[in-house]
Amino acid sequence: MIISELAKVALQNLVINKLRSFLSMLGIIIGVTAVIAIISIGQGATEMVQDTISSLGSEIVTISPGFRGGWGGRAAGTARDIFTLELGEELKRKSPDVAELVPSIQSGGLLKYGGNSYQASIIATASGYENIFNHTIAEGRFLTTEDVDNYRKVVVLGSTVVRELFSNENPLGKKVIIQMGQRRFIFEVVGILESKGQVMFFNFDNQVYIPVTTVMKRMTGSKYVNSYTAQAIDSKEAIKQVEFLLSKKLDDPDLYNVTSQEEILETIQQVSSTMVLMLAGIAGISLLVGGIGIMNIMLVSVTERTREIGTRKALGAKKKDILVQFLIEALVMSVVGGFVGLILGWAVSVLVSRYGGWAPTLSIFSVVIGIGFSSAIGLIFGIYPAMKAAKLNPVEALRYE
Amino acid sequence: MGEVEVPAIRGISLEIEKGEFIAIIGPSGSGKSTLMHILGCLDKPTKGIFYLDEEDILKASENRLAAIRNDKIGFVFQQFNLLARRSALENVETPCLYAGKSRKERIRRARESLDKVGLEEKRFSHHPNQLSGGQRQRVAIARALVNDPDIVFADEPTGALDTRSGDEILEIFQQLNKEGRTLILVTHERYVAQCAKRIIHVKDGQIDSEEHIGQ
Image (cartoon, rainbow over all chains, first blue to last red; front, top):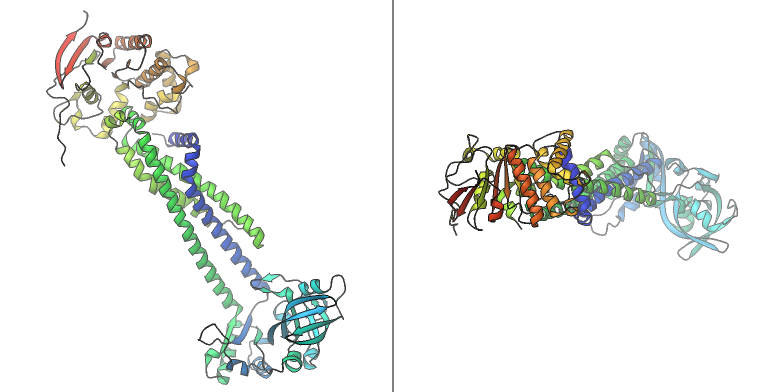
């Protein structure tokens, strides 16, 4: 018996029953589409996040207050009491693997210039911050040591802030009003950053930077900063050194958190691969449902074609010939469905990647999964109807009305 | 619940020589179809002996029976039993497909066979629903002959045809018999049975009587 001949016949049968074949394949099509799209989107998004995190700079270590067990993930209050500028200096001085360390206080405030206003994130920090995060200065300069030492009221603007406040004017040297709570402060614009775009949940372009000392001395009166960001030579070593120094200051290691960018990256990778697997698993369920759909239609087909099966047996078809014929029909249906799903899934991932802003990826892995799974399902769910057909008694099959 | 075994035929003793033209005649329910199914290796009797060309059919496997049907036997049915979605040529090719013949060989044999039963070449590509009853039965006969079988079984071959087409079909059968093929015709019509050389009357699962025509 010639397999290619049977495949041709199976295809013809599918074409004759167009609507029915399509509906039967729909489950497989949807399942494969979902699996391919999810894997591809997951990969694309993860790669993009990795790229952007790496583009921030490398070997960055963040020292932030620890979170108390409690609930709501509230920052531990006591930890703030030691995050002073002096501690930052000490950490930088005593850790050989910390090349640069800047304090920062994050807050929000309303910026006003002329008739325009913009709600921006305010980062109070020091000189060196721009190097750690790979910021490029578009115009003017970043904060300097003199700015910090003299509590100067100067501000460096992100590109979105510039666009929102200054339509066509050159912002350099202009005075902007920063409103925090009920109080207003006048700052002079000394620099503009180049656009960096959205990096995960952070938008660097809607941030403005002011000297950390200006906030502490002139605005809030606080002696403490929120966190430190360090440029490490070797982040693993730097973490050890900083943790050791902090442990001498504080008894409770839960009060502070020292993490490197690499650790964050690893966590993101783990979380995203788990998510992709879970979603693909859910999509896989619809493949299963698709398989049941194919089995159902094949059982109907076997019943409808009982006489044909009887005739074929009378003409000399062996059990194996009938089995192969029906198995191939189920297989063709599921593989065609798999290919359609592959194309649709690819289309969906290209579409989504356009919105997400990453390069669409179609991995061999997802192609193998799409085609492999759908043909496996065709085989698994096709075998029972095909066996049923093959086992028919020729005399009874010929008599079937 | 058990099934009660009701023998459709019993006590039948029959010998058919190569080249005979036999008609099995009897009312419906007489067991003539069962007899044909057994002779045609579609079914095995629960008890008894059946030798075909010195081969003990009761001991043959299902695959062996399929091979015998493919190689030695051709079937013609009352309702033609053509594959609806296949052309006349493809229908005739089918037994060759199961015999594992090459595509070229299949087409050559199918054309030859269709020529033999007198179907016009322009109809080779037609599907069964584009053919008349007589033409369909010709295709079915061509299909039965394509593997050059020794025995041709015909189960009420004229039952679904008008008299004229029926007569033409019977003529083909007589021609086949003249070429030396064994023909076994199952019918309930006396008129159809008459074209055979030996008529076997079946009644209540047994051979009631036998008659020889002509000579």
